[in-house]
Amino acid sequence: MRKLFLCATAVAILAACNNGSSDSKKSGSDSTLNNAFSQYEARFIDALWKVNPDWATSVGYHKYDSVLVVPDSTATQTKLTFAQQQLDSLKTFDIKALSDANSIDYQLMQNYLHSVQWGINEEKSNEWDPSSFNVSNTFAFILNENYAPLESRLRSFAARLPYIPAYYEAAKKQIKDPVPELTSLAIDQNNGGVSVFEKDFADSLKKTGIPAAEQSAMLASAKNGAKAIRDYANWLKALKPANPRSFRLGKKLYDQKFDFNIQSSFTASQIYDSAIARKAYVHGEMTKISRKLWPTYFGNTPMPADSLELVGRMIDTLSVQHVKPEEFQSAIEKQLPALIAFIKEKDLLYIDPSKPLVVRKEPAYMAGVAGASISAPGPYDKGGNTYYNVGSLEGWPKEKAESYLREYNQYILQILDIHEAIPGHYTQLVYANQSPSLIKSLMGNGAMIEGWAVYTEQMMLENGYGKDAPEMWLMWYKWNLRTVCNTILDYSVHVKDMSKEDAIHLLTKEAFQQTAEAEGKWKRVSVSSVQLTSYFTGYKEIIDLRELYKKQEGANYRLKAFNEKFLSYGSAPVKYIREAFGF
Image (cartoon, helix red, strand yellow):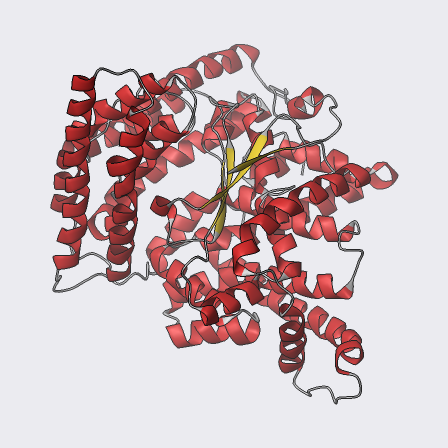
């Protein structure tokens, strides 16, 4: 792993962070009520962590590190009781009398609590998604994050170990007719996490002064835990459900999940319709660029009459320019300083130079969903590492690796770094952790987070990144088309029963993706739902908001002012940020 300490000129950020996200008053706001609400928020969060100790650990609150909740009927009832009690408490506050910031927090808390009830009573994914049961993530976090002395962390790790067998026994009792695709994912991810207990924990113990007898007991407990994990994976392999549930969520659950998870001002079907329209627009722009580029790359060769074939051939020609498989991660590392320099030069956004970004090979327990991702420290652990997780191509067949690298060619790899790191996810999450509101950081909205990352791709190119080369614009439109088609794919598969054949056709022929990428996306849509719509939904809402702000500001409009004001509200849904902007 290599730490990249971001270099930028330090400037004051406090004013930007407090612009809108602090307790700004609105007409009718009651200061006494707002103070009472802030006190309630603190009590709410304390109660939240008692019910969700793993979540607490992941965001840097370590009071409950030694607790592993066994997911039995008692734990389920505890969650339902917590949700109802907190909803009753929320009702005692008049949302109209709260400040803008507290009003957003109120709605985020209310949405979360209703989603807990819906998840248990309606969705019931614990019955058909075996991958929802996995202890490895939190154990690995405790082991790898340097938030406390190693011996202290190892003792917290060890205190949780005896509960692993009961955890998986409770999981087995809940699973009914599981989804085959999610069963396979559960097997892979749980087996992938065994090394945390069998190797990583033992290696860490050797670095401490913990007495030998205590270490021996810890290792024995870890061995039992690893056995329980393997037993669960083997139990899943042996399952032969008579009526396995389809991975397709269905319209009713999909619409409900979209409302809870995306929190958009649009419905799922409206976003789907917007994505269809956007696809047609992007195809038109890509056709124009391809016609312009054709003579440069093909000379006097006649252009294909079919516009999609024209664009496809142009993309295929450009895609051969890519890094070698063994250079994939190092190429990502080398690109990040150039992105920082460009943002400084164009004065697009302040980037905190004190927050480390660590590029690492994707851990085994995270494998199976996406090829690149960001893991950021929570608001309680602001000094912790932010990881850029990069999927390894080690051991891939040559043909599969070549297909993947053509997808992430030299143009797309730069856009991927913008999206995942700077000024995309990494930058946004640093801002979110500086928000005065813990609720906005803890209950971050996925559509805002993903939408920001997509928006920054366009913003960078609009400001001259890539020297305004038509090749870069063509590849960005291809990348943006993937965002658009994520929404079309997800809705079509889970609501309209789109077949795999039609899905692959959409992705390869209309979104110009390589076969390996399309196959990976099919796997992803078969083990997840709704999340794929967050990219386009958030992007659309941010672009719409920026246009409103631009018209309002007129000659005084400054892109940096918009970006920093937008980010100052933490990871709140765009529809609430829009209201705080005054629209």
